[in-house]
Amino acid sequence: MDRAKRVDNLRQIMKEKNLDAAVIFNFENQFYFSGLKAITYSRPIIMVVEQKKESLIIPSLEEKHAGEKTDAALHIYHEVEGRGSTDYHALFDEVMDGIEGDKVGIEFGALPAELASSIQEKGHDLIDIQGDIVRMRSIKSDEEIEMIKESGKLVAGALKHTLEQSEAGKSELEIDYHGNQYLFEEISKNNTDSTLDYFVMSPSGIERTNMPHVFSNTRKLETGDVIIHSRQVGLNGYRAECERTYFIGEPTEEQKKAFNVMLEAHLAALDFIKAGVTAKAVNQAALDVIKEAGYDAYVSHRTGHGIGIGQHEEPSLRFDNDLVLETGMVFCVEPGIYIPGVGGFRHSDTVVLTEEGAEIITEYPRDLESMIIK
Image (cartoon, rainbow, N blue to C red; front, top):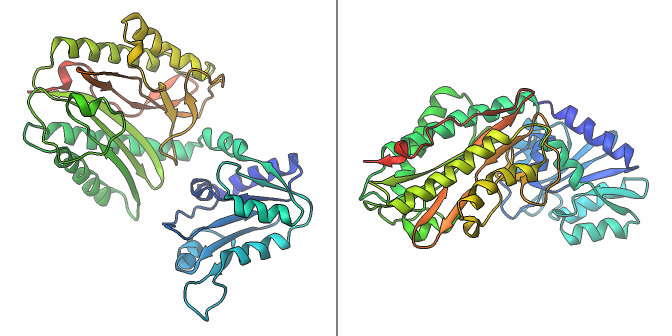
């Protein structure tokens, strides 16, 4: 990944806004600019970008890792007595004391208030650059897109293995395991020195599928169940998503109708989405189908969202987003309907916006017949 170009782009924004430094606290943004993806737990990492240098304030246990990933100057705090500074606040103060000028860019939605206050106490005005970084991340480079496409193949493969091994008597956790095992084996075999992020949930039954976001549990699948199997895979930090609603045995007529309305809405959004249309128009394309069928009262979320380093990124495909979509953006398209006493119904596919339209990178059957496990 061309991290240097990203930092140069950030510095250009800093010039345009007359900023003397930018403080990056969001861990996804730190990865985007530095390449460091740390397991932080309770130990903060702070990145400071100036026109001539970059600094990272990190815990000592990340020193070797950071040294391999970035050329930034490292300021180390310790948890063992007698080895140096034990207070990241003091190190942050030292870095900020070296900054001349009166304007500092921060992510208003990420930087803790105590750190923001310490910057202000030094006489700096705070300027929000969160939207600028969101904009940068929303347009993926060719290299990022290739990584997301690889994740798309993996997530579709994992979903396939879970669906093929689903049967009455197995728990939600057990069916997740089959897809997970495929992921671990496939990546270990074909991707040298790679990392894997993944998320999976498989709510089953009428009640649990009416809750769009619940962790898989030990509930055992039963004949007649509806299941929403949701997966994300991130190869080396870049994610793709695929979800399918399917059935153990024959669904009821009411479930078939709801499924087909969801599918038609999903396909309508996939057909409509492309560079040059607004985010809210994509949402409306799906909602028009759902409204015509009389199910609009059962819609509880937007039609989709961006994806990449983060599980959910901007832009959001929702009713109030006037943003015009652009080539290089990547989205999960996932309209859903959730009907008490009937079940929840949602497919999701990841698409890359290209000059020609939208490329679906998570191909897997969507039709009702393919989604009935007999």
